[in-house]
Length: 214
Image 1 (cartoon, helix red, strand yellow):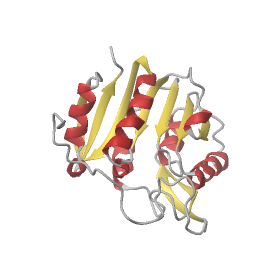
Image 2 (cartoon, rainbow, N blue to C red):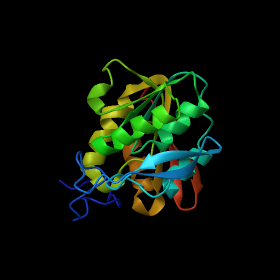
Image 3 (tube, rainbow, N blue to C red):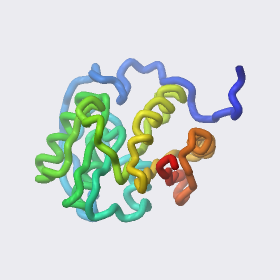
């Protein structure tokens, strides 16, 4: 049966053997320190091959960090697809009284994110796989640069696993490149019952504002 819309974001992954969304990257775990802007201050973090954006904060994440609304002072937050941690770390720094969860499938990325949170003394940031988050936790805020390149089906399953866990007044901000299907994703989210608006557009990226289902 044909889909109602011709989604224009990618349907599959690349042919390279070592994806940043692999649970166990095959590349050598050669860690190094880089300096990146987090919560308005340049700070040292550790990165490594086999994780997303291992050289710098990628452009999409940078757009989200700079242009999403200031997070609440308190609450329970989620960085979905945290990688080495730029979003989770920024949320933890900006809202020290909030509880921040960072979730990823990539074990190397999770180890890096844990180490980066520790080195920045962010005791309010917890990092793990999806199973590490108690089932009854609800989120007041979700920030994500979602892994569009995992393919439509996997991406949809990921969002349908986490967006229903928004608190009734919770909101998610997703940054998606316009030419990788941000407008198609917005339509699909609305079809799933999540009120979704384009919050802003910056340098070819959309930030989608997604509210909890009524």
